[in-house]
Length: 352
Ligand SMILES: [Zn+2]
Image 1 (cartoon, rainbow, N blue to C red):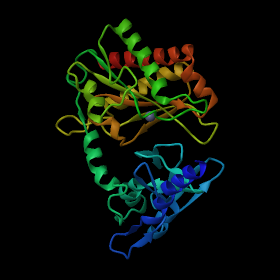
Image 2: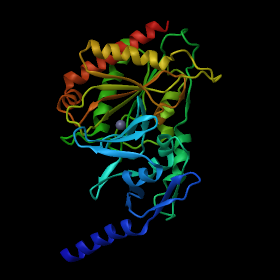
Image 3: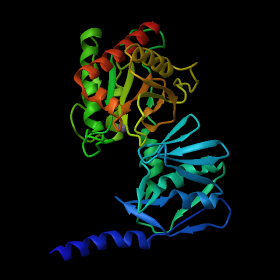
Image 4: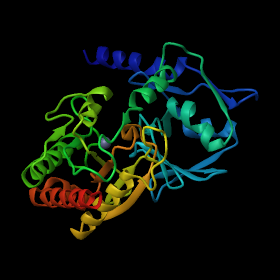
C-alpha cells in the first residue's frame, strides 16, 4: 500500500517539471528557452533568476530581509515569498500568485513574465509558453484586469452631501483564506471580524447603512465583491486585508489608494478623495498609537477606478507577534475599529 502511494506521488510530481518549456526574450531578440517549469495548481512557476538573465537583469536573494532584490533601470524592485506585491520604488504592483520557493529556488508564476518583466526591463518582453494547455495565465490575465476595472463613482457632487452609506470589503473568504499567520490564524477570518466591528460602530454612531461585501465565510467573484460599492447611497469603500513578511520584525498598517481618482469625465480630481480619506484614517490610527507604515499609491486591481473614496488597508503582519496580537484581541480590534470610525467621521466633516 505504501509503495503504491509513493508511486502515485511520483507520478504527480515528476512530469510537471519534465515536460513544459517556455521562451523569453527582449522583443525582437532570439528567445532563450527555459525548461525548468514547475506546475502548481495549474499555474506555471519559473525560477526568477532564469527569467531575468535573458533580459539582462540581475537579482539576488537577501537572506537577512528575506526578499529578492532586482536591479532595474528604474531602481530596485523587490519580490518576497510572503507578499502579493512586487515593489518597484514606492509602487506596489499586485501579483495574483505569491512567489514561492520550489525545489530550492525562488519561483514566480508566469504572470510576472507576461505582465511585469517588461516594466522592470523598460523594454517590451516576448514570453511564450510552448506547452499549451498548462498554466494558461496569459489568457486569464487580461479578463481579470478588466473584471477589476470597476468604475467606482461618487454619487453626490464632491463636498456637497453628508455620508449616506459605507461599503466594507473584508478580503478573501471561502476557499481563499488569504495569508495564514504563524499560529494558523487566517486573514479571511480576522478581517471579517474587524469588518463587523466597524460596521456596528458606524451604524450606532452615524446611523447610516453599512454594506459588507460578505458577512460569512464564502467565496466572492470580483463582480460580487464590488456589488456593495456600487450601491447608490455608498459614499466610501474600505477594504480590509492583512499580510505576511519573512522579516519577523515587520509590523504596522499600510494604506493603499489608487494612483489617481478620476471623475466620470476622466478629469483627475486634485489630490483625490481617496488620498484625503487615507490621510484621515492614518491620523486616527496614529492617535490610537497603532503603528502605521504609510500611505501607498498603487494600481491595485481591487481598488477599481473612478473617484469613490476607496482605501485598502493592510491591517498588519500575521507573521509578527505584535501585529498578530493586535488583530486577534477583542480590545485591540475595538481600538482599530474606533480609529477607523474616527477617521471616517473626520473625512466626512472635512468634505462638508
Ligand atoms: Zn489579503
